[in-house]
Length: 126
Image 1 (cartoon, rainbow, N blue to C red):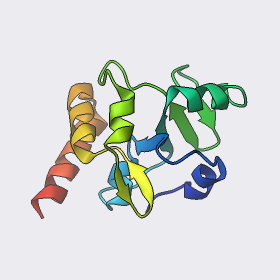
Image 2 (cartoon, rainbow, N blue to C red):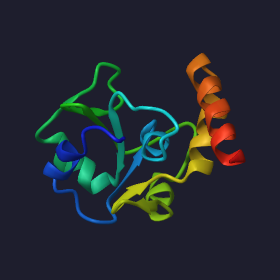
Image 3 (cartoon, rainbow, N blue to C red):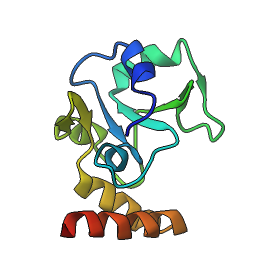
């Protein structure tokens, strides 16, 4: 189950202006739980959100309760708008495609990413 959807909906982000990334695409498919919600937003939406919310601890995103908003996903993806434009709608919400999650997690190579890649592989093999 995907957590914090009510918080996301309360932001009233315009359709086509965002996509859920990070562990969200895994959680919505029941691959594993998400502890927060990472949302990739277009630059104009980022600019509006940045007027109301502060940067996260790493300084790379905006912390909005249990949601972290980002306007880029670099250095892994050069065109964040393309990730939003090609998002897959599941249960009425846009999610970055699983293939992009796989690319990102493969590039990151952290222990948790390797575990997630195994979980994704098991999911896709069913």
